Length: 236
Image 1 (cartoon, rainbow, N blue to C red):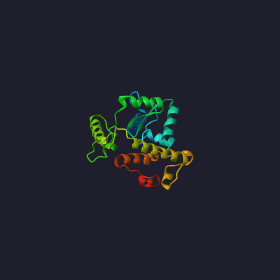
Image 2: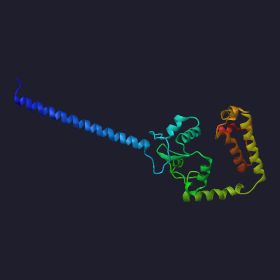
Image 3: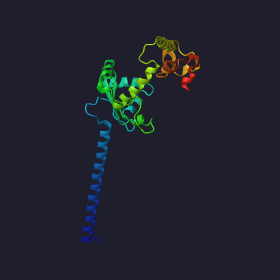
Image 4: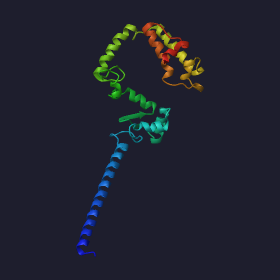
């Protein structure tokens, strides 16, 4: 027989279960809202005045979108982004690093001529090249360190003719450029050139410049050059 006390106990138990279920639902809803908000912020949050661009994917950032658009030719992917967003400037994240893509000749020229764009990012991949994780060189640093190392480099390069017009060096540079043009126009002649020469005059960059740059630098330092037929050593 069901008594009044049993009904009261059952009613209290039901109320407690209902309150617990409501609290669980509210807590789960709150967690879902927070996670959704964080995901939205991660995907679409951008720095102030940042140009339009693709969302930020985990790990790769917007760079992953570019890889999905055109994995082999990122410059074509950048052009597609410029056409899609109808802007010469596009902003995306390369990993966690905010980056701006410039897709117009005049804008690129303006960027390269303005002093506020002369800086270099302080990235881990730059510091890992040195034993003490210091920023070295002249390509990946800026500020006082760059001025000091540039001064050091110019002082010793003058011993090799830097800053002076050498007729023989100009002749050597012209010969290397003509050789590179022949490779682009006529295609590969030797086995090592097939790795960067494609059909219809297509070549891979920067591989096509390797021998040209190496020979000019080698001539400045030692007065020698590598023959085209023996240039496979440059790619080893």
